Length: 160
Image (cartoon, rainbow, N blue to C red; front, side):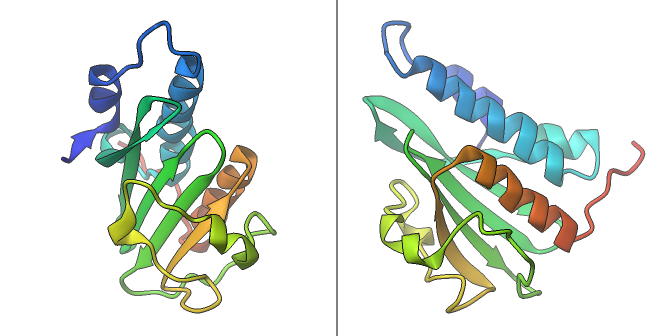
């Protein structure tokens, strides 16, 4: 499976009777709008940046495993289960050396259950800052995490 996020989300939208339906759409829109908006260089890149490469179930809802590949040689896999975000980062070239402003702690690594992305569960950031997995409980901290990556890689919008 490898589909654009919006296409996948529309095909797999939860039934209206599902209690967590709004939370499903909130996570999809957060990744689509906020995360991709931070990391994209162009509008075309923004529209196609986030792909769904796997799934997992939470609250009886099929949820996406997101994939983002940056032109800076970084691959990101992430999933949300309505309790926490698990994010795996693989940098093909550059170690990820930036201040994440406390948005995650390697001590939370035990909460990295990575449902749907088990093949992409890596060790802690302290063990290997080129290939690591973090567990973040707060969506605002996920935003900070991606702001830190944007700053590290000096990602700025280009004119289309």
